[in-house]
Image 1 (cartoon, rainbow, N blue to C red):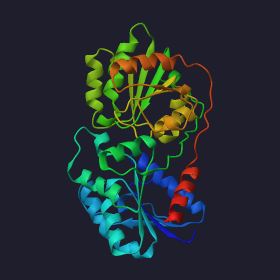
Image 2 (spheres, rainbow, N blue to C red; image 1 turned 60 degrees about the horizontal axis):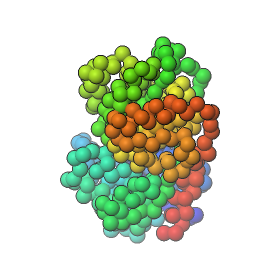
Image 3 (cartoon, rainbow, N blue to C red; image 1 turned 90 degrees about the horizontal axis):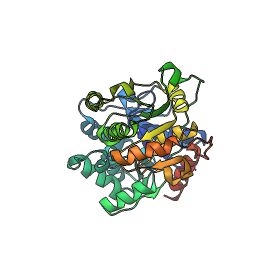
Image 4 (cartoon, helix red, strand yellow; image 1 turned 30 degrees about the horizontal axis):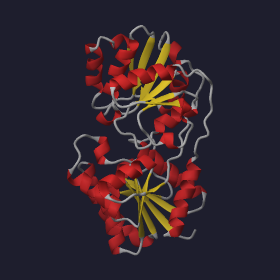
Length: 346
């Protein structure tokens, strides 16, 4: 393919905030492997010094301000490219300006909706999100679930290109032994934010615990960490919950492998890379509705609603899955090849 591509991202390892950054990193690297002419534009503070990465001056301010500042820089670069590929609402102005002031085509991938991230949606972010769906030459979503939600909210159904699956290597450490845990280990890792539904997990775990010797291990941190600890104390189950704080990426494989069940209790989960990491480790999963279930054998994913009663019942079912299993995952190369095919058609 002789088209030149500019990707616009936000973070890049080790400075990442979530699945969007992981997606962009893999897309960028897979396109380079395929000898596609591609550059990745990032805020200067998150941009590593390496070939094909463009550091943008994002100024001082919140994410909305930085996105607006970056959009002008991207638009000034657009004439050098055939396609600009942005992600979520923060790329909307950059894509729109580039499309307007040059001949480049605009691809916009949606990873989640503001309405799914918080009960309080609306305002400028939602307006930009609507632009990111309505105005590009091609809109993409990372799951059928998200594509349907996007169509319901904005009237346009994006093309679906699923994420690849992430794998975490295990060093063989026994985390249960290191934490001195008896019985089963139920594991969660992620941002401690409203969207993740961790309070429902804690209350559901309390309901499941009666008569069961199980420990809930909660990895990660966020704005809700202290309130979650207080909630566990209020329920008088703080001795059955371990808050690990941040877990280094090189240790995550051992946590997944040691767990008897991984739980993803999100209020809204457009895809779910942690679900893929758990499954790739051979650990069964309890999860609310997500995009990964569209791709794998659901025998190893117990479905739950984001409420404590459903999660309590789901933990019981999930811990009864004792068989060893391997899943047939999806590679990031497959994701990149489907994206490349979309570029070819523009």
